[in-house]
Image (cartoon, rainbow, N blue to C red):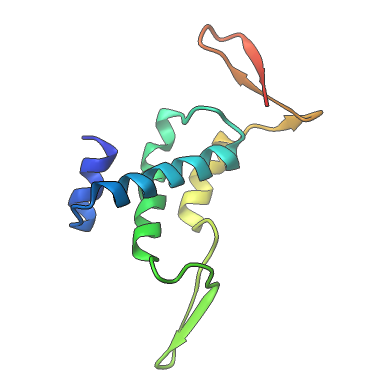
Length: 111
C-alpha cells in the first residue's frame, strides 16, 4: 500500500494534491530532523503519522495550545511517539558535515 492510499483510507479525503503535499512536508521534516538525504524504510510509518497529524491540525497552524469549554490541549512540534521512534535514525553533524552510508556501504559526506 502506498503512502497516498494509506492517507485516503485513514482520512477519507480524496484530495490527492493535499494529501501528497502533507506527505511530502512530513518527509522533508523527518529528513531535516534526522540530518539525512533519503528516508530510511523504518521511518515510513512516522512519515504517515506526521502527515495525518498535519491533516488533523489544518486551521490550527501556529498554535501551541488551545482551551475551549474548560478543556485545554497543548501541541508538541514533534509528537512524543514519533520523536521516540525518529531519534534513533538521527545522524550527528561533525564539523558541519553529516556522514550517511552510501549505496555500497561506504561513508559519504552529506551537506
